[in-house]
Length: 431
Image (cartoon, rainbow, N blue to C red; front, side, top):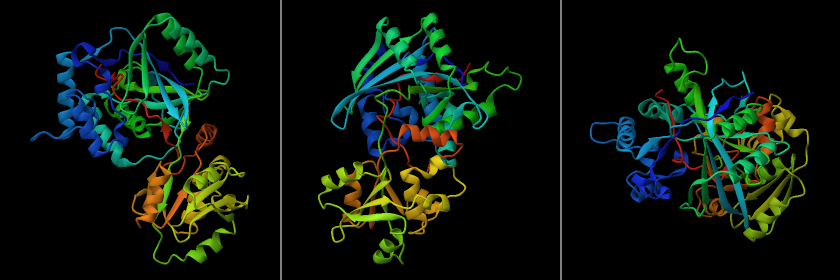
């Protein structure tokens, strides 16, 4: 089972930086260049200076980040907690018109190679982002953003125990961020409580929900820089900072990522529709976008995919009718993978009918992604792509089943909402 421990986190000093909401930000990989500049203007100590650094003169961006990190530590803007702690953060938000709360427990997790322990990935990674994060980790010698992990909690025992602990604890920070999400932080450093949390979490597997590049970079950092004679688990580099959320948490929400597709030059609409009818029931849908979206999400078949083909052709519902199609199309994949809507779309439509290969699906040239359906509709209407596919969200249970089957999902299968904040705590690796 996974090893989950408290740590002496590095945190912003409110006495020096003031309001914490002005120095935190989303994870680096969801921040646009324009958003990066907006966060930097909020406060000179905003965390984007570390996670998305800029070169200064002859100093490259990674060296700049390292200099900033050391300067902030020296000035007291960042300070290290004296006692090992777990950092518990609640995020309260509105989702589909209703109020929700999601609770994450941040600690440090003993790194394991995938396939050899109890930590499971569910997505593929790319070399570019890992090389980028590796340079940054080397320069700062810290985990700057947490990996997002999930843990099974069938009887809600961990959630219930945390509720009791927090009733007896003081809040360390409360604020509403730029997205209107209410964030509350508790720093739990009482040894009796931290021991109880570790004992409960050490009985469980962990599934990486988000931050696969950060996890694999931490593995590489450990393998490269830990002292050869150090005992396993004895140095900070043996661990990675991870924010863990119970799979039974009612605030655990996955937003679907929809696709806009550029069709190949030889594409023929009538031939395309005729070919997919072998595996799908193709039904015209309402030309009202809102009614169309309701029809996609309320489809009687779990494998219902929405298709928008522009103003002249309209909206369609694609409901899978051939149960054997995925077994034939992906015989090398486990059954949980074949049951994913994103996998069905990728295999039966994008690869088999539109003849888009893996490179075309991952490079961003032929396929564009958005969590906002109206943005997909706009792409089609503006001619940026010819077909828009609207998906239902992947279920948490599906994520777990695919990971435990030893497989990984297609690109952009999950988008957990809201994103974890970066800047609530950092894990120092300089020990």
